[in-house]
Image 1 (cartoon, rainbow, N blue to C red):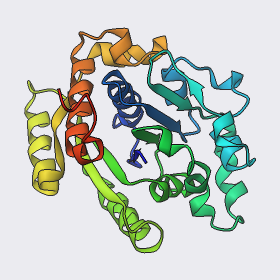
Image 2 (image 1 turned 90 degrees about the horizontal axis):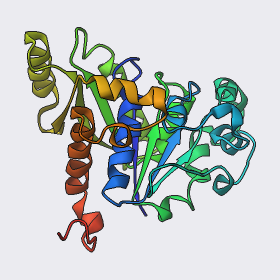
Image 3 (image 1 turned 180 degrees about the horizontal axis):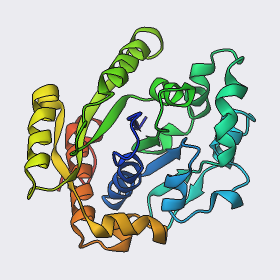
Image 4 (image 1 turned 120 degrees about the horizontal axis):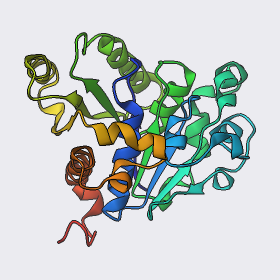
Length: 265
């Protein structure tokens, strides 16, 4: 079974969706079969991979609320080895529709049970909240990756996220771990970025990834073309940063892939 990683931070604008799309694309580029699940009603991961959510008949909403077979919702993307379960604006009301369901926190986990075996990595793009959709993602996941932007108030709200992770461990998913903390929007020319990086490293210690995501125009432009950075401009700093992150995550999980031809090179 592949590694299921949620990308979560209830604070908006931290590079969560950018990380989900570009990390998944980077893992796929290294020839690890990867599935990205977009459970954010804004559907930015879906559009960022060139799929218009309005044209999707079976999205993650139909899987979680309508009982549609998850295999009927999987879409191929432009990048080999990368598949997507798209989101839809209908997901806005999903939490209300799920609230009276039995084991409502495990709906996603049960839905993707048979699918995760087909992939080396499953990346879940969570909404910017700690509601039922995010709880479903954390319950279904092996680990959570936390993007933190190198700006003022970077650690604001992280205590609440860490407390949510603790509660999920205690009551729903005792195996849930923190995959790592990722510094995003980093600019080594500014004192602020370096101060925030030092503060995050003091707070999270060795759980901070060595890979850092720098501010990059090409990375910001790519979603408007419906492409991850590696397809939009593979030579850009952003694409290289996320490839480095993908390799770091593979190395951290190399026991899972000890027979992989990629890692044996």
